[in-house]
Length: 355
Image 1: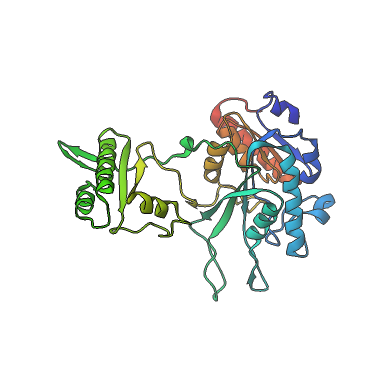
Image 2: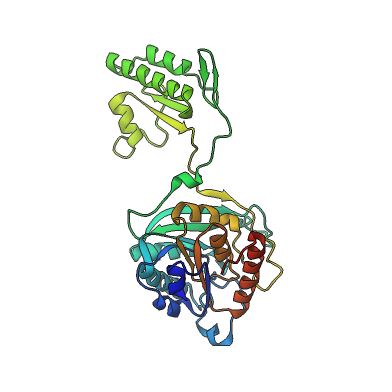
């Protein structure tokens, strides 16, 4: 059945069993994208059959064993992930004996030690929640790590660009950016500058006019200019550690622009947790919205998605909805039955058979 999905003969697949055993059934380098949220350490009691309770991930006696078990799973995943593939790992933290354990970073660093490249640490701000503790701040976020096998991987940033909400104003000879920048202030600073050579001053004026022309042409919606002696580089003025500082030192200026086709999302996602399915036996459900950027950016159209801890099937649902071929694995028959019912609901909405 796995091969049927890989051959595009089947649109999705749910498998029951321990992923550490079932991952051996996959051929090498066949998965485009892994999106998963494994059981958190000592956080919940899941509905698992008796034969799996002794080796259930998340029930380990100590955090070191938990990290080791997850690292082992992702070592097995590395074999079946394509060189261009990505892993998106959502994992929550845990207070134990009143100490915040740092479990997400323990797992991420263990994976890094095993050769994975960590590309992003996304903060999922869950927007709401309750807390009984009165001696610390309320915990309201989780981590979503993006990891890859190598430096060259599939990433279609055009699919996730956020379109600008404000547009420039062009009235005759007057041109202002989306935030009202006209270039007049920068032009005056360039002409008055005692820190620019005559040649640097000429180059800065030409560059400024070029970016304003790009606004008129609809290529750019906004810009910021940094001029030696007037503004400082954003992060550091040391050219050895900051490319912008080096550019400022060499040219006397640099310009940052916001392209008209949009900008890449930031690494803080404000997404309310899934509520629809919390009335059943599973209490940690992926919201579909959380999966949109990972799927669209790092899984090619009609690509194969794997969730080795699929639970009640959110990653599989999202894969179907975004026209990918998802495979989900879980040790709980109860959760897989719920996942099948949810998939039937998606089938009804789409008005076609999906598997």
